[in-house]
Length: 159
Ligand SMILES: *[C@@H]1O[C@H](CO)[C@@H](O)[C@H](O)[C@H]1NC(C)=O
Image (cartoon, rainbow, N blue to C red; front, side, top):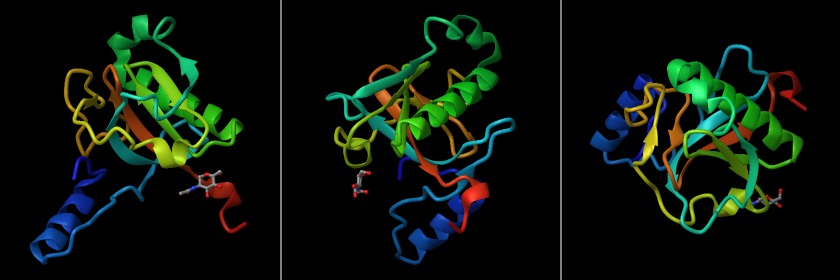
């Protein structure tokens, strides 16, 4: 298991492991960010060798990232939210944050995002620390995607 989004879920999955049940995917807890209208869940950290998400939707490396290091957590949340918005607008479902400031998605992203296998090369709300289960937002280093899946906005739940 590469990644767990919350302590409670981790405790629960230890219980499952201890009782012989393997929790395959722990990606169902919505990420809630202040001032972000989009809802999404964490999927995990994956390698990118073959561009499993073929389309660059947004690149903040050359603009905001330069100053973003000084306010990393805010930068990362903004990147995740704007990437989620773009992904929704283009009618994709999965998106990946890569190389500290890029947003990737694209055709068939929902079946290809894990093509190159899982990775440990993603960082979280502390830019020099590996993505941990307490981090709401994470991003891949070079050639790694941290993958999220969009979920329906709360306002349209039940439609
Ligand atoms: C992936 O997305 C396409 C287009 O929205 C959809 O037709 C297909 O059923 C999806 N596949 C999976 C495995 O979710």
